[in-house]
Length: 189
Image 1 (cartoon, rainbow, N blue to C red):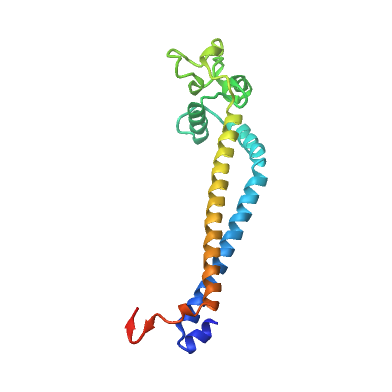
Image 2: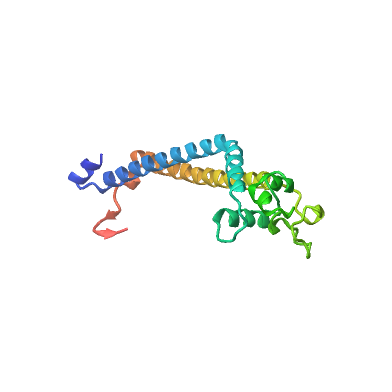
């Protein structure tokens, strides 16, 4: 159709060819987005298993020094999410860092913001966040995944509307002679 339009100088056929390819490209993008949404929804449950495995590994390598990336990440997560340990603050008792320091305390990032004189001591558990970080991290990641899924669905709906409009123009063109020429009598309409 496009080759006929180019060789016979019919701009209408070239235009229809462009609409056809536009619809095909939109359809491919639409199908890709639907696949991403379905995979995101299916695999969102696996996020918890992956977070559990990763968080266990990171807590084992915690050393309490600021230059260490794992230590900074744990401290940051605990401060931002107001949590302590994997399931609760007692998880720190099983880490190498806790055993090496021998001071019966958890990192200062476990201290509640309202506790001004908190030193991370397990003797004062009311100064520490009681909720573990794993559940909060999983919840946050699932929220983000749901936002991505909804955004992809919104884009897919807009693209579906675009494909529908392009198809309507394409179908009307074949039945309506009013779209034939834009130039009449030597002047532009």
